[in-house]
Image (cartoon, rainbow, N blue to C red; front, top):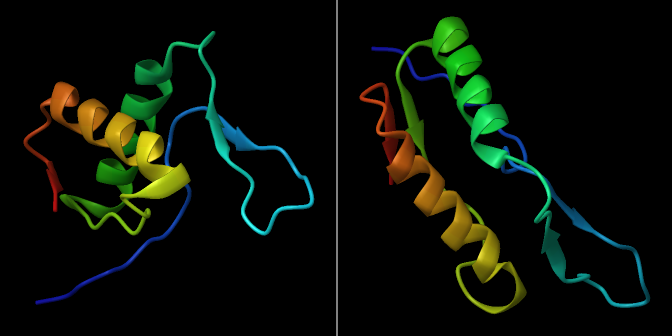
Length: 86
């Protein structure tokens, strides 16, 4: 059995504007259809690597909580049997 790990940013449109804080608050874009790019990202991952098991390393509290919540909702609404969210 083989395991291949890929890492990256959450595949929807968000940013962190630089300021004097150590971790600027993430901002999720409200003017973009996130699902199209999100699905294309996972389609590409599945073509390249097969089934996907997502391990979320985003802080589920504090300023990153909205990122985690949005990501979780998007994975669940995608309902792709090749993608498993831990």
